Image 1 (cartoon, rainbow, N blue to C red):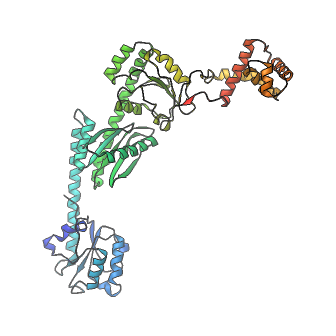
Image 2 (image 1 turned 135 degrees about the horizontal axis):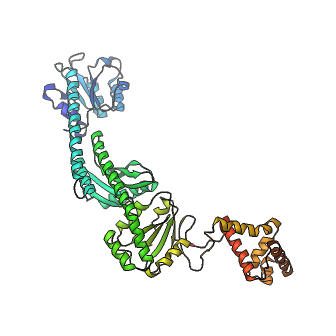
Image 3 (image 1 turned 180 degrees about the vertical axis):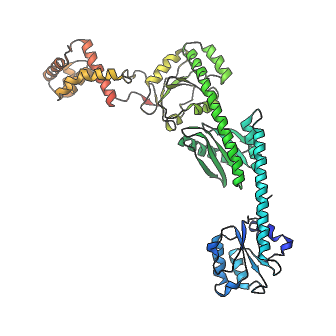
Length: 499
């Protein structure tokens, strides 16, 4: 049953109502929430929008029809009913003119029709509509629940929801891709901006709901999953979503969220299998790894591939990676390895930007290679891990001191402490001397000082360090200590190009 409208009220023959002004179909079909009566000169403070007001006209000696109608229109009154024969025998001409000018529907209520009968007719229609909507909601929830028992539960439930709402419903996965939609004919002009809006909500990382308007169509979008571990989003385009419809939508949101969390639980169980496949790949048993991957997730990326190492994620990216891998089969494989996730990227596939923008991770990437060199490629990717974002390994620039332990750092500081305590240019000159292959002449030229000064400073540094700097091993120890301290202080030169 449709909601009560002004047109339905005027069509009631038992009420004998007559339209005085021309009432467009949009006005006739507008929902009528209530009928109220008042003869106050300004009843607007006591009215809700969406109501019809009944009056006998006794107030028009204290206010003009123009001002009176203007206040009603500003308040959002749907229509004005004038009771004739009580105070005034006919509808006043100035009232008719004011209603015609503002577009406020005006109808006549004859003396034989009590205002109470009109109010009761509207109340009964509202009650019948509310009962019909509650009955619909129960039936719709039952239909959605039955659909969820089918072999394809989520697509079936979404299809049933779209049927019940008479609109479009789409399920987006954690990567922002449309995984199920009913009906499927959403035009590309709406599909692309909607996917962009959903991706922005998912990138924000928190649970949220929003309304997105695209080419005049409103889409309600609700994210699915826990904050920091979103599993996807549900988007709905349907007109007149009332409280009962929202209840049915909430049922599907809960159902989809549960199903996606359950799938995430299964994916955690698959993590060990993924790790086993990665171990086989790195160990050279490509045939075994490919057969397992083919059965479980689809084909592995074709050679040449790049290895990636993902580290430092604030939130779990597993759901996102699974959705991304499902979108483009054979482009991405991933597997957990300790606190890191190893990526295998096919040709032309880049590390997904949300890994660092949404999940706060860092990605190091190797050079293109074959599976025979995958273990070495993983080492390259790990060596290329940047402080933030993504970096690609560059030949000859590997910094062996990036991951120095606290013990190694402490040893480096202890070794250099006598020189640093002495102050002056001693450490700077020692560093320049090592960078110039321990050549006094070249160091003097680089620093713009006399070579005898260089020789004296290096001799003094060796005495402070307790090392014979004429030996290669002593010079190597000092150079390594300087590099470790450089990396710790952030003063080391940039070693990797941006991905």
